[in-house]
Image 1: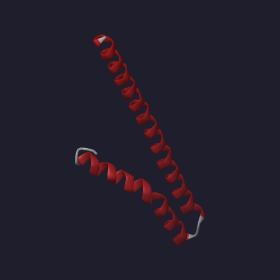
Image 2: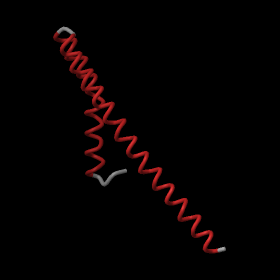
Image 3: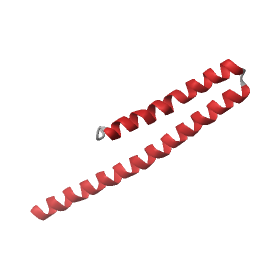
Length: 81
């Protein structure tokens, strides 16, 4: 009986670890897609819109990715969390 409980607990923990790995991969992929889309939108806005408006739109498109990178640097420096 004790061995069955230990085996079940071990299996649950393995499933949890597998789910966290999968979620991490999905998160990295989604972050890459969002960052790439923001960069493309910023470049497109600079090239297609008039001077002041294009630069302003590019700044808006780049605000979220830059803020995210800064946040990740701060979290990394503070030990995460």
